Length: 591
Image (cartoon, rainbow, N blue to C red; front, side):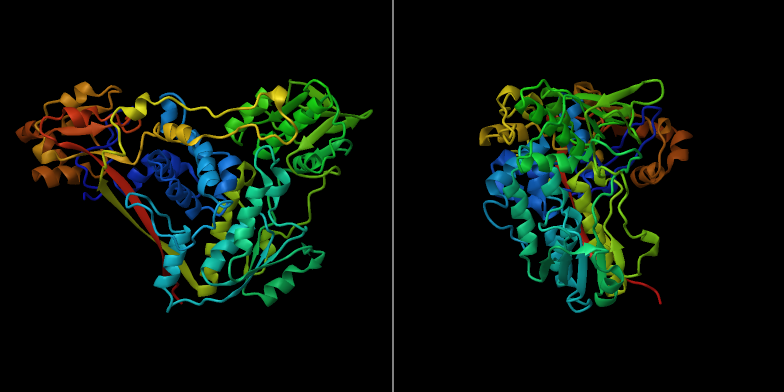
């Protein structure tokens, strides 16, 4: 087992010159681009690998460890992991969202309860501190040093509030959830149409949290209307404010303007009244995309042609959902986000930006807000009592996964407050031998992208799920497209004969043999001193320079094809898994 910072003289070649980065724990973590892009640090690679093996329960457990709403995110996530997927530089990204949906359908919340004490499923998996296992481990490790049983109030039962409740219950605290409406779930219930995500999936994940020991919920409790923040702060050890995404509030004169959740709710309860022939949807988040698709379906049900236009600065929701909206006839105009609307003679006008005119509409749909365009009266964060923690994400409009991350952070802040100490994270990284049954040298590159069955727009009813999802055969085939970015080429430099065969065989040209004097970078001097007994300056000014050669590797180009491993005549190059683990730690705050 090689530690992650002893992989020889490999590094990343900067395109502007031979600026070298010596790989360490952070470097190897960032190479797993899908996981690094996920705000929850989901072990995406581990989940995908498990599906390729046919180990669906393990795949689901890995997704669920860090995300109490992993099944929701399988169908309704903005999927930053897919955007970052390095497979996309070759052809198309691995369909991570649909694979997570498959795991949820086969082994998720509607099939059996998740084991909150489930251990790691495989040694090469990576575990973060805020996984269910990590939180439970922290509780055990510090059982004699921390206070449990604190009384916590959570205001709001959307994904952020319920995630905070989930984590705090795992830590042994008592949690009272206060919800303004008669249902828990927040915008997951009111903003995601059933043709994207069946309601039963949301309800199952919500119920799993509300049924945890120590969690209670009260409905019809609206802040400022019978629920007083000052009283909560006085009666509880801590209060989590999870009021949802306030969104962007718009100036205007009222008129035929509604919010995206209102439109989705219309379809859900069967109020598919005329939306008009021209509908303008403002914003590029998932809520707006879903509303656009709802409007298109309502128009089609009325026998009218689709006349729906989305206006957004950029698409920040799921790119696949946006593509599906286009298939359903929605026009998307990007490059400008209107901040006001106006009404004249019953028509609403939406500006498209300087010099671009405006769109007139029978109905305008905003991502959040209501017809009077007034911002809600919420507490100023700067004026909150000391024991009130806000669960708010600056990326809340980008989807459920960011709200879940905000809930994790809020729970950690509450735990630190209760203990009167800071929470730290101990980190470790390890290399593991590759199981050849898991890693095909050429198979991942030749695997074709799988496409699940899509119902054509003409056959879609108001509630029909469009994407049927992967079969087991399709899911395994898609999972095998993963390049396994946690697999690294490790060079054992003492046995290298610098023949250059690895450089010659590399298809993308990501390997380079060079002299030490041609490279520079932090840590390079100490590496040379370790290997040759002298630093970089000596190498540049000595005949000994002829003895030293650096193997540089540009990981941004590497496709893990394995040809360098195969061709090496002295078996200097090998593949090894990188996995990291995190553990929560209590750090005393100086008096």
